Image (cartoon, rainbow, N blue to C red; front, top):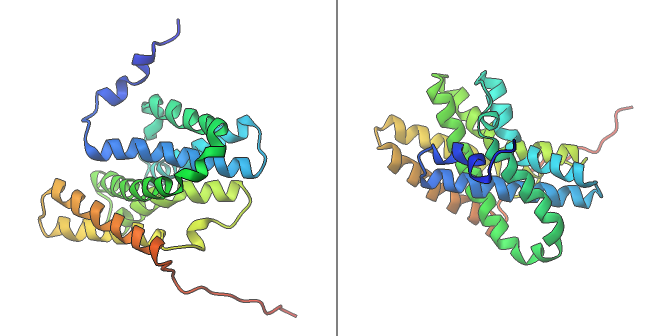
Length: 222
């Protein structure tokens, strides 16, 4: 007997519905759509689209959990996330011609997702009592690894390594979160400050094309 639609989302209903969770859901849907578009640019079939959408949206959290030994992996306990990201990816194949009009919205959702993923990653490592440097790496892995996997599977240099500040935003958010936490700032206020600050940082980086210095080496070895 197949589960009802409502039962698929029971894991979400059982959680505390807060702003960070809502942003997380929007973010994984947006990331799944970006993955589907990348797959479309490589002329992948529907299965390829679904796989790239899934990896882009949930790959960062999966890598984080494997690295930290945090089992069971998050999405395996919340199948609604899988349905959401695959549905978003497949929906993209139908609405792709209209998505270029939504570029600004995608940038906003992506920035929100980056911050949310980074903060969630930090909290996971903190709950497991890892050292500070591991907490920061956990936040960054969650924030950027989905996009890296997407680009590697699509045979291109990851965007995070060659465009506006992205990984640096994740690092800054993680560092600010830990500094405020050490200063005794309330958890909810800390999250709000980090979210607003990180979002503004990312938007300014896009607006003014802020980048890290690049390294170009063309000399051949004889």
